[in-house]
Length: 232
Image (cartoon, rainbow, N blue to C red):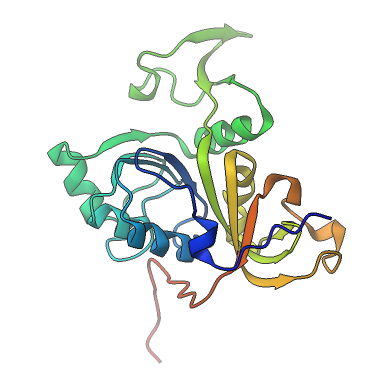
């Protein structure tokens, strides 16, 4: 069985260049590829198109890349937690394509499945549908949406093996599995890396065939966007 383990995040991100399209997994700040984002910062690559459900917060996640003006375009769904994102959008510094969340997930899934386009009712009659082909099915109007693919997909899993098989935990399973299938090169960082054969096949969410590089990450902060506590 092919061993897809790389030594560290530096080796995992070899080949990332200016102007590339990247997918970054996770939901909010849950299950995001923290190590890969830090390495992108260190590399200083520019003019990136980033596909992610959200844009992090000002001082964490993709928000760090925005702070350094490394992102040319964001393709996202929910971006309400990031003031710098708002500033760059309103000033014209950042190109933005906002997509209904379900449509975003399906466009990514379609990219991984090799389906170039599909029809959905979401967004018909709104700004989302401007310039897109529409068609009627059974008396209801639908928009044609095209697949999304990336040069690199960066995903984060709870546990993985040396063959690239991945298991996600909880909310981290929302976007990571679809993105893992939609990248030309998929890089997985995991909290725990085990030898091939140790994972229960029935528990695997992403088969290793979709993963080209895997490494064990470190120093995960796992921040929470909005923390609400009650007084005693």
